[in-house]
Image (cartoon, rainbow over all chains, first blue to last red; front, side, top):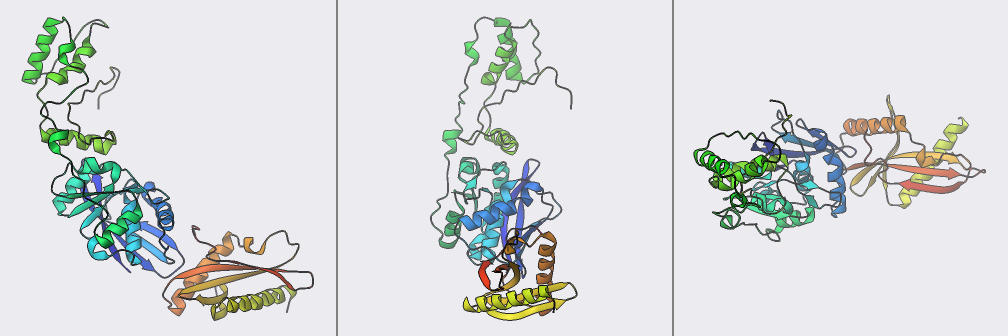
Amino acid sequence: MLSKVYSLAVLGLDGYVVEVETDFGTGVFSISIVGLPDVAVKESRDRVTAAIKNSGFKHPRCRVTVNLAPADIKKQGPAYDLPISLGILASQGFVKTNSLGEYALIGELSLDGTIKPVNGVLPMCLSARRRGFKGVILPRENADEGALVQGVDVMPASSLEEIVDFLNTGNTIKSHKVDLKKIFPDEPSYEFDFSDVKGQAHVKRALEIAAAGGHNIIMVGPPGSGKTMLAKRLPTIMPSLSLEEALEITKLYSVAGLLPSKGGLINTRPFRSPHHTMSFA
Amino acid sequence: MSFTIDRGKFGEDKAVEYLKEKKFEIIERNYKSQYGEVDIVARDRKEFVFIEVRTFFEGNLVKPVESVFRDKRKRLLFMVQHYINYRGIEGECRIDLIGIRLNKDGEVKRIKHVEDAFWGHRY
């Protein structure tokens, strides 16, 4: 039987929707995944088979074909474990198919059926909202990040069984909400502040002018004179981030996998100190 | 009839007896094509079961069910797919192994049945 499940993926900094189609054919058990999968996606068949077995579901005894559409974009990462496993379960009739079309699924599976966090959840949820999904089912660890997107229900789940239960009965998982005002305060708090600096009056004046006017700045001085110390404190006197800027930064951190596990939103201006021997490009 | 063929035929007869006892419905025996042979095709409730029977004498250092090596596995799988296409069957399938040990007098000493023997193999 054919089934169709929706998933999300990242291309650059933007998300897009991936359709995961599962079909059964007569034969001895095997799973083949098509649609330009990379090694992590191909390996998901082993995680999926183990997770299905260890979550108490029956394994199909037939040939399984999984198609990840659109077939011309390379699929990377383990986030397809969850949609593939639900596709197999739906094809066997363990999941009601009418509720599957309303939700997009992302998540890595471990062998015992628990769901592990993935990267790039924020752009994925934005694309889910664009596409008009009712909700996104995602790993519990990614819930804070996903809930930054308003207008789409974020359903955090921690196991495969929980999701099957939710899709069949409609309860057991409650949508996760975050208070944007709480995590995005008007006055962001930094670890250190520009007011820590004693003396250095003329540098401070130069930094203030640069921060106010948005100018570039070059600091020259012997080692230990406080160039890095001052530069680190420069973001604390710059204008605070707008929500759009904060989301843009969070997107970058999300795709790179650098997002802190708690909170979800990056609400302070990042300070980066590249090494002086780095090359152009 | 050579000794080897006798032994194999004897083992398959015993395997069929064993399967009937376990309420398997025997569909076909010794299905042959140009590619090879399937010993027994049976039905276990809803599933089609393709069975390979291995009959060894006691004292053989290789266990019967462990004697199906890669070439044989590949051929078995190919034959199963061929059978499915040729007979046009639909439904769930699996491959079972039955290993039979004979003692010196040619009597059955032990029967070992491995269900879904090649589950998880990459063919």
